[in-house]
Image (cartoon, rainbow, N blue to C red; front, top):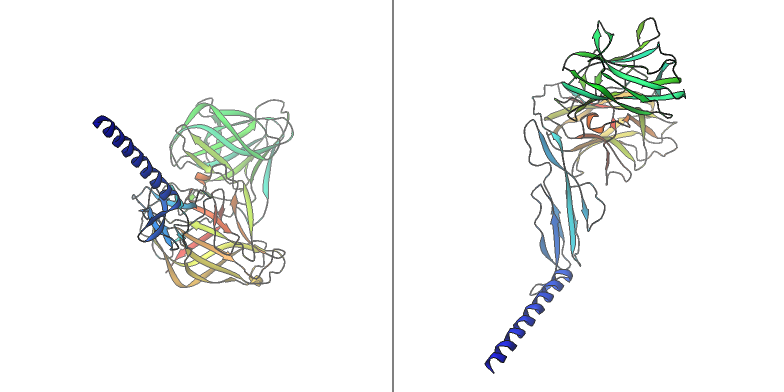
Length: 460
């Protein structure tokens, strides 16, 4: 009898444990009924930024989940930036904080992060200018250089920003007719011109010209070693004789003298006074004074060059705001802001500006321009801020333009660059990006493939 009793007790104990587990699971799913009433579990997931802890929340109460961003900074290196959050498995939206109101069910929130902000921390003097200043010419469209026969060539002259072995080259081109093959390679400089010899003998690659405008990437037959600070030429010519068609090499309309990404300081472009595009007609070289489009890829995966392939415009009207997101690499006290802008027709409202932080707090706002000031197709407008604004290194800010009373038929334009071959070598890498929103500043979309043309000047 005793054995049966013990057996029955064990069975009863097992049933009680199973029942408790079932009750616990139901409590987790539906909430917990205790002395304080029904509670619901809010799960907060974040790999960085000291997130609010997950917790049981009383029925009908509010709960705010937040993180600190940026976080974990390392001098002269990268830090983590919160790129947004998703609620209950939904799509990610920008922000570092979210409040669940009148909670009546379980919820979850997942914060996303990206290591993308380089901190330089240099001392910024008065009157210092930062931004994406290269306009590529105050005109729309692209310039075309033709290679009609094997004697004609195009050269992209540049000063190397990095050192290493080059394994591939990319240019922006199209076949106007036929199916021409293109030879693209590296040559050393001789008094501003290509020296006529392929580096390392076979420092070139051959590719088929594309039927539509686009980037053509060629792998070099032999890797070529280049050195920071030295001048080189990306030389483009026909791979065959006779040439089966016509090659078009694309550049910007105006002259540009720099690479958008400065590896040492992402807040400013990397200046290159030697940069230019040259053409050869079979007898002599000529400087075209056009901003080239090219990318060099190193064997270790790094790259440099001028990766933008289009001068573009973004419309500003009604609830559509456009500007630039920046995460400064140093501390700045800004006294002036400037954008390259335009308009269509006669906008019904003036053009205004806002400077906001990552939590959408407005740090400064006011009038940017009257429509009557925009007399050219593209006009640089610069204004002095009523009071200086401090931008801290590693913090996210948006500097945007808006015109609430303007309609789409007669909008303002903000000009910039886009369609980057490699967004990581656009202006500021991935920590500065063109930004826009469609709902008067509530939800922002950053375009890693584009940058506004703008500049910020520190107080004198």
